[in-house]
Length: 256
Length: 205
Image (cartoon, rainbow over all chains, first blue to last red):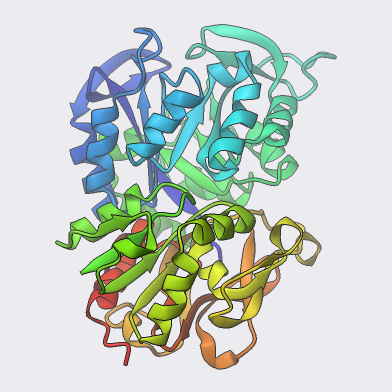
């Protein structure tokens, strides 16, 4: 039976892991690769590294960190942030990343999804999408708008429509981050996660809002997400991956 | 001594690093005449047609046939496993190496409309007794990424089974000195590392 995945997200700022609240106010919580290796040993199924300062500084993601992670980790890992085109994707994958996450770049240059899928296969191409709840309109019928640049720039695009288009263009997985719930630990945004998970034929990773094991139970059982991303739960709130998985098992959710 | 075949089918960094974590220093080769004996790892991701073309261009098709004949332990992974079969329905039909009887077919989404294809993520493997499973609990999970799967002709060639999309498919195969996995042991945590370690000490014959 295909198991539900627990993915640990590490936001990397100037080479250190930080945890932010709604993209503001970040606290230093450690070295990314050391932390990832610990989470891996603790039962994390996958790791995501977001280099959140790379884009602003107009540089590629930290390839030394990617190479260190590839040596240390025996589970798949994704890198995002600072990817400027196919050559940056190639460099990250050659350094040992399993997947590359594309967010603002994919919105601005959707063809990058197709180019990436053709060059490396869809399984390497993750669409990272930030969605914000807005009033339902003719152009945004799902009630969720795609926002970019870490949530600062609205795009006028419907999140559900963009998810479908991105998959048609070559995305092999979607990591859906709900801006409204991100960092506030009150649970994932189940509505848009469920809409996207049912609409696309590729796996959907729910992101933003986990603060209790029940939140993961809900996003798996109600929204039918394929994977759930956690950050502060394991970085600062005292949960271990194993304790989360024990709770999921008790709720009848199959995990590794 | 471990040799990894580099035939242009995907990047082999994670396979090499997984063996390095076990204290091995694998040799990557791009031509058949670079093989100096010893165990062979035959990985790969990508399409069957380009994979076979890459194998032939480097003489690896003949090398694998010879090594299998001589009883050299060979580990096929993902596309490497699929190409050991007689053929694949991918890319309009591709002839494989034919070292294991059977073919490779695509998941049929009508068998389970809720199943996602590609089959991506951790899934459990029900083992058939084999030295490469030593120390790994039956039903342990491994990491998969694929849309096609092996349908071997002989039950006896099946070393492990996994369920997805209405299929209970062969997720591990064995035939003589060949062992092959649809999943990625190099990305499967402790269980995957144990399988690779077992491969390094496997006396195939």
